[in-house]
Length: 229
Image (tube, rainbow, N blue to C red; front, top):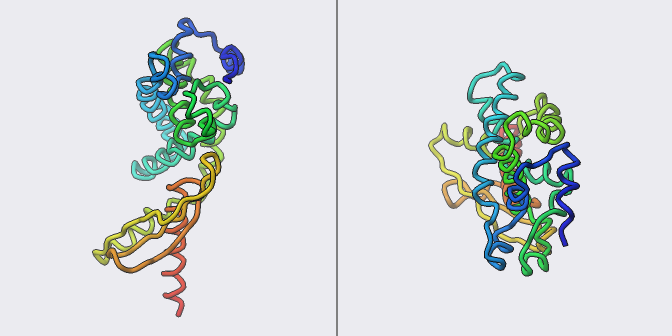
């Protein structure tokens, strides 16, 4: 059972002119299919574009580095893992309208559903209000996280490994070799192969992306250890 959406408005001092937009933002496709209504997919599309723009501008104002660094940082702050973190910070899953199957399979905590709903929520505010009103959510939920990450060491290990092997004209391939656990608490195991044959590293994570990053980190560590020998 989802929470009253008025609490969500009060949380960010919002007052939707068109309440149906907020309802739609919280409507997962499973509920839409069962009830012959509209899902949040189109609003998700708008929210994705708004987040790219606003987070990009925030980074532009706070990082004096080149375009490549800005692009990489923005990708980190709007990736699925980041969006899930934003959604969980104010229990967005509690407000979702889910179909019976998704409700039973604990869809309120599934990363993909939460990430999409957060983008749809941002999209709904932008459509109903304007960019300035959208900042009410971003200032409270997104920007503090982005600010905390500004001085963190880059942890995009996949990119680092890719750059390292490209100089030798090698290729990389990631493979999820196992996934286990309930839907709300999955564990993925990934391996990274070089030239499709040499297993370079293995890693575990709550999402496929996290598992791949840890596999890449394992490969980088192995390469570094080999250089010391």
